[in-house]
Amino acid sequence: MRDLRRARLVLALLILTSITLIIIDLRGGSGGPLQPLRSVAAAIFGPLERGAAAVVSPVRSLVDGVSSWGDQQDLIDELQAENERLRVAVDTNAVERARVEALDALLGLASDVSIDIVPAQVIAVGPAQGFAWTVTIDVGSRDGAETGMSVLNGGGLVGRIVSVGPDTATVLLVVDATSTVGGRLAGSAQIGIVAGSGRQDLLTMQLLDPLAPVESGDVVVTFGSQGGRPYAPGIPIGVVESVTGTPGQLTRVANLTPYADVSTMSIVGVVVSQDRVAPRPTVSAVPLPTEPSVSGG
Image 1 (spheres, rainbow, N blue to C red):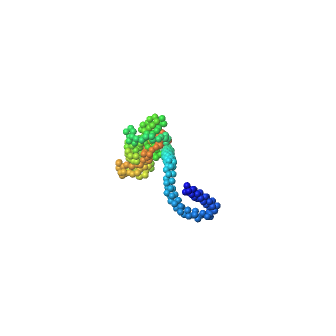
Image 2 (image 1 turned 135 degrees about the vertical axis):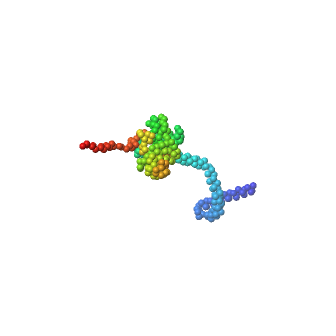
Image 3 (image 1 turned 90 degrees about the horizontal axis):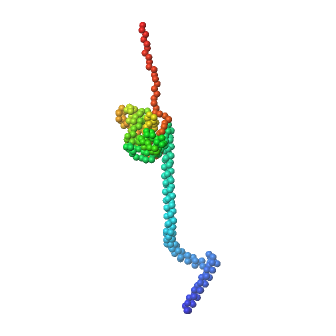
């Protein structure tokens, strides 16, 4: 019992002493009598507190990170979805811009050649009716399309219509190996036969005059047909890249690069009428000289 009483007395004295020291320290402010003791305690326990913080802080950050992982993942998913929406919007705008540019080029060429066209869109590509190079367009007889009409895009001649349905038409491309077009050198007006090679980047032109001058860079346009079918006159076909053979040879051939890139076609135009016809030279009647009369004597 005495030990218990002694312990209680000591505890009471310690509590009383602690309260007294706290009051004295608070009244003394930063220059109180306990300031030296507080400085010693800070010097002893400060490094221990910093070490504990260095250990506890990463653990706390990891716990906080794990607890917020769900929110971060939701944010990542949202950002990825927004990025995908923006990418689709950019791609769509690029496609629409390309279509507008193709239509502008087509209308510009139609104006230069003085023809009326019905704009159309290529909806299918592939062989048809025994031809290797054909496309299907979304205009047909209801839109005024007929067999034999010329088809072009903003670059130049694409081909001609070989079959027509109510709402669609099949176009034989100028690069098909069975395709032939009457062509004319824009500079010298020399004519020849332009044939497809079965390749999208090559046409050949057999000049009717083996002595006709032709050089790399010469532009070839359509010669034109009666009534503008199958080809209206003056439509650009291609540019001469090289010539095989020498002047005078019957096998002299000009190799052309077509203006119309058939591998990237989207918007084309069907020639439905033209304001001019193929040029035809005029002939004037010249009176023949009369023989002088001879009078008898």
